[in-house]
Length: 474
Image 1 (cartoon, helix red, strand yellow):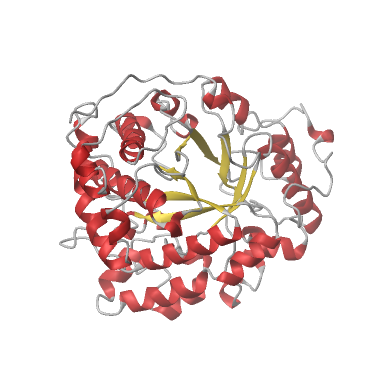
Image 2 (cartoon, rainbow, N blue to C red):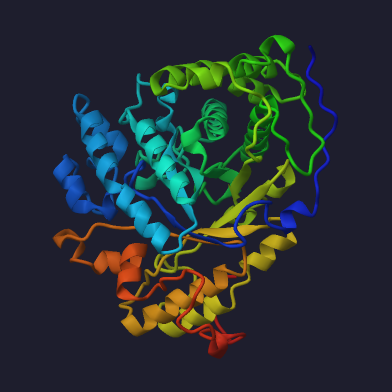
């Protein structure tokens, strides 16, 4: 039976409102350094594991998951299993729920889908999917929704960063081969999100974390954005999931109507989808079958009812302003629910002058939400932010700094703090690192309110509104 596309009708109202069934505002934290480990957040544990510290030049020593796996090929999996088992726990989930957190963003490397790793020249720890499934199950039971964030892309999307899993200047993500692997990853994660009960907390998948900002260095990134959305929707249509605000339709061959992987194979031949999308769907099939065997999901993958109760996933992108020099706008590729992500750190410079007054003037006059809405990048949430500064911040300032940022970001879809926790050890000067980077420590110290929707001073921005500033934060 032929697949039929009955047209694509996008609702312009969709990007101007939140998606159905989700909280009015996101109050969230990142689960950073769990399944993509960044040693700066847990320096003592990293050394205890066998890693090294190489200051600013993270490519010169064992400072990433890739270099660790190369250095310890025989023990890397067991070493990381211990880390995955202890860094994020049921107790953490209980604490976050009690603190009113309703969302977590889960940074993931492409290697969580182990079949995508080219072992001839790529090395990463194996076994992380088991811990992801367990953690998502905890979150589902707690009523906390999850964003699956493709944080570390095949080929590396940004140079010289620990968060890519492989600190290197040889950026190769923006190639057909690695775009393809990222699309296969997307197909696998979409299928798991709808079919694996442990993934029941997942409501969004983020295409890429922090790509290179200069669009002239990211060839065909706009095409990848289009294909990312279509991969998600192709999997959902195969499952019979309604995609709102579109008239996409797809018929599944009768012979495959009770076998998801067979149906996905059939969808991969549908000429209504681009060649890149169809190739990714086809390659995802044997990977899902392998995961099914390893995770006890064979019955779900091979005998699934096709009318699902799950709603369509939110396709999530870094917003258009994350790139410069004539970038592609992700709003232009929307099919069904879509949302946008922006990250804002003052501590790395370039946003406001390095003093308390300039910081508060800048954040209180932030116009990113309005600017994004003007080009269709709405709803917008701030997927990474924190209390870190370029100067020695007093406790008095941090109370204001937390309130002012929460106030600014809550004018959009909400906020997701980086990070849920950091290590407290002599190598972090006790709680000095956690004081400004750990949500749980910020709660303990009182900078962050126990009710995430509350403020110490809801009028914190009143003295700083429309003040003259040399800030570039808008």
